[in-house]
Image (cartoon, rainbow, N blue to C red; front, top):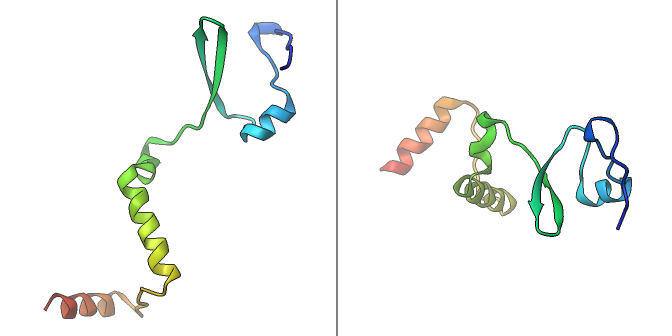
Length: 93
């Protein structure tokens, strides 16, 4: 447990040991919640709205499946987009 002084404008400095343990860096956000015992700070990593799809559960499942395919050699390499389309048409038949 650490005792921290409240500075100008209500600022506190989290001890370096805690920041390292939680992976907090300058510019990161924390959520503050009032509890019956006092206050609780929760680290929050914010994601740009245009990148949020990547962290959706379904997308992450697809990423994991793609990683498995790559790791086991289940992929093809194409010289250009025409070769890719040709291969897809063959597989459709």
